[in-house]
Amino acid sequence: MTVVGFVSLVICAITLVHFYLWRRLVGSTTRPGRTRRVLTWVLVALAVLAPVTLVASRSEWGHFLAWPGFFWIAVMFYLFVFLVILEIPRGAALLVLRWTERRAEGPDVADAQEKRVALMAAQPVPAVRPDVADRSAVAGRSGFEAGSEAGSGRRAEASSETGTEIGGVIVVPGAGDARRDGGFPGGPYGQAGMSRRLFIARTAAVAAGAGALGTVGFGVRTALGDPVIEPVRVVLPRLDPRLSGLRFAVVSDIHLGPLTGTEHARRLVRMINSLEADVVAVVGDLVDGTVAELGSLAVPLKDLESRYGAYFVTGNHEYYTANGPQEWIEELRGLGIRPLGNERVEIAHGGAVLDLAGVNDLGGVASGDGPDFERALGGRDRSRSTVLLAHQPVQAVQAATYGVDLQLSGHTHGGQMVPFNLVIPMQQPVVSGLGEVDGTQVYVTRGAGFWGPPVRVGAPPEITLLEVRNE
Image (cartoon, rainbow, N blue to C red; front, side):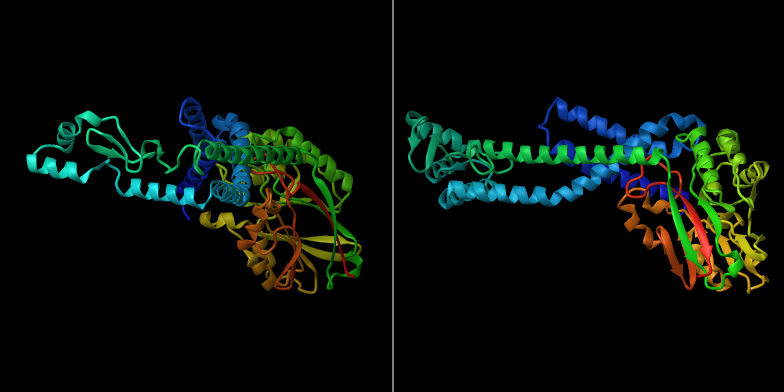
């Protein structure tokens, strides 16, 4: 999909969601008037803010939009989720309300009103009494004129069965009271019924609003809080026993950007160093901007500590930056982190050797800088165990053909905001945690940062302490 196509899809989705929000939060909860107009324009402004934020926040001039824009995107999403969930009880409540109102009125009244509604729909203009119509046709004059002459002495008289005659026109009883929705005051769709429907609509709107704000508030606190340390033990049957116990600190999707600040990187470095790992693996999506914009935020990474060094592979977001990933690769070299661009190194531990390889992300394919598994893994000694750093879990499909024992990945954020975790399996074989692809074990970290909204629901940020063992 092209960039233009993707942007068009996002704008269409945002527009449809906001129209649905208007229907449920404004259209069904307010009567025509000033309040409805004000709320409508507020929602229109927020609908414009969402796509503008997605574009502008990637540029330095638009960083001021990041907080309000991404916060609204998160609230918008969970309003949509809660309102969709509430459609079932809302619909059930309306059905019960209609049933109870029909029972209260009785079948005869209900049938009579249904006949009135049908009559009004089929013949919207007032009915003219046949004898008046015949006389007017003969005289060549309007029914009203003829009726005026024929019945001038009884214009205000009421007929007990056929209705009131005014100027020769028979008006059906209650027809003037009919509303556009076919209801009648006091009837099942009348004033009392409307107030109860308004109550149901407003109750659903308040419940959705409270649920969305509560969920987003919890998600912001989780996203901006300390990452969870996830201890993981992975058994590699072919691992040399002398390598058993080798420990990796795995971190991914840090997403340094306008919402993180320098403290984000400092905290991660402090937590990683406390693990005293043998190897630090930074598995892509480190940044969301250029070195000129965000270089100062990455400076704390120079303090990373480990026995055998820190290593980095590109993620798709490195390819989204204005100057591409190469400037960040050089920047990280200067910070003491070694990039593995389709290459491998040897980790000597306890008298044995482990191959640690890294491949570029699939995001580099368009620019000719994609993953090259042959270059990274070809010609190696297959008696050695191999750990591969690759940003996207789906890359394990190719890694498995090279006999890789374990792949370390990120990219998915574990879904970041439930229920996105249910969608990810359509593209990636593993959402989070340890899985297997064609005989290759894959560990997917949820990532230590966030992308877009500073919100994490059901997928707290993570730093993984992964230990490999042979049994």
